[in-house]
Image (cartoon, rainbow, N blue to C red; front, side, top):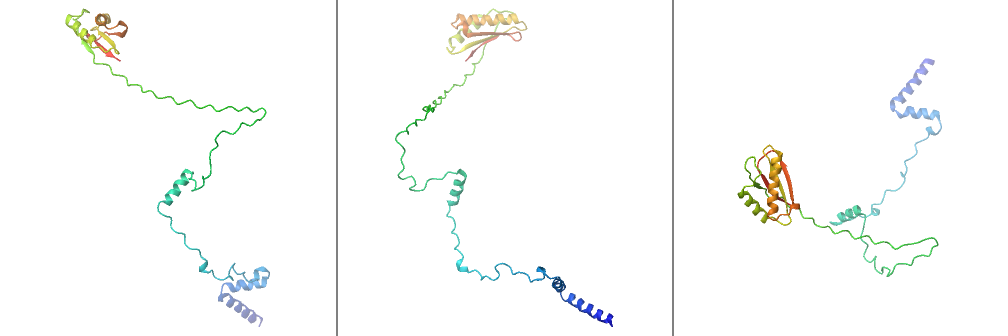
Length: 215
C-alpha cells in the first residue's frame, strides 16, 4: 500500500516537471523561501505612459553649401574672424604705458632687429675661351713667323678682364714643353699682355702648345 502511494506521489511530481521547465524551479524556490522565492520586479519605466510624439523636436535643417567647408577650415587653422561689431569702439593707445618705478628693476628699450642683408646677384662665371693652337718645328722651341702673327692677333683681341693660360707640349720631353710654353708667353708679353696675367704650364706628352683666355 505504501509503495502505491509513493508511486502516485512520484507520478504527480513527474507530471509537474513535464508540464514546464519553470514549474519545478518555482516549486523548489517556494520550498526554499527568501528573496529568491518572490516574484521578479517589473522593469524600470514599465508603468510610465508612452512618449508623446508632439514633444519630439523638429529635425535640424541641412547645412548650406560651402558652410561645412568653412567650418572645417576654421577647425584646422584654429583662428576665427571676429564677429561683426565685436571690434567697434576699440582703439590702440597713442603712447606706450609708463615704466613702473620698481626698486631694483631696470627696463631697457627693445632693440630693433637689424635689417636683412640685401642679396647681391653674383654673375655666373664666364666659361674659358677656345684654345688657340701654336705649332713648333719638331724638337724645337723656336716660334715660326706665321705662329708669331697668330699670337699677335690673339693678344690684340684679348678682353682686358681675361687672363691668359699658356700650355706647352714637349713630345716626350718636359724641358722642351716648358721652353715652348715660355716662348709663347714671351710673345704675348711683347704684344701687350701683362706678364702677371699669364699662367704657364707644361706637359711632356703632345706637340706644340696653345694659349687660352680664362675669366
